[in-house]
Length: 140
View 1 (tube, rainbow, N blue to C red):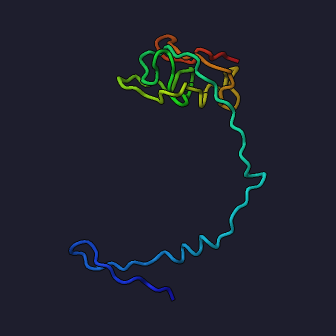
View 2: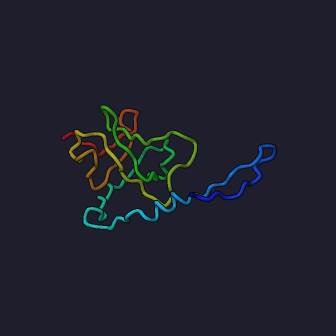
View 3: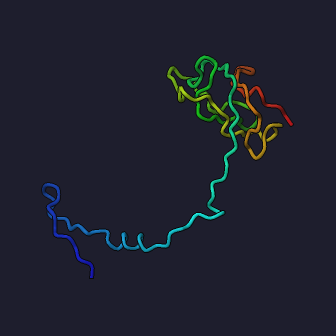
C-alpha cells in the first residue's frame, strides 16, 4: 500500500489538497532497461549544407550587405525555385554571425537536387522576374 503525504492547505478558499509522491513512476523509470549505444545508434554524419554565397534580395529581413543570415533556407514551391524563406520586413532577421545555407530544396527537377536536398557547392539568391529565386537552379 502506497503512503500519501499529509494534506496541504490549497489556495485561498479551496480546501485542502492531498499531495501524492510520484513514487511508482519514479520506480518504473529507474528499473527500465537502459539502451546501450551500438552500431544502429551511432551518429551518422550530416552532409555539409550548401552555403548561400550571395543574396541580392535587399528587401529581405535576413539579408545584410548581400549576405544571407538565415541559418537555413528552403528553396522552391510547386513550379519555381523561389526562396521560401524570403521575408519582406523592416526588421533584422537571422543570426548575424551565420552565413545562410540551403536546408531543403523542393525543386526535384534541378540538376543539383537529390532527395530534395541541394548538393551544389554554393548557391546565389536574387531577383528573377520580380520574385526572389535560387539563381543556381538548373533544370536537369
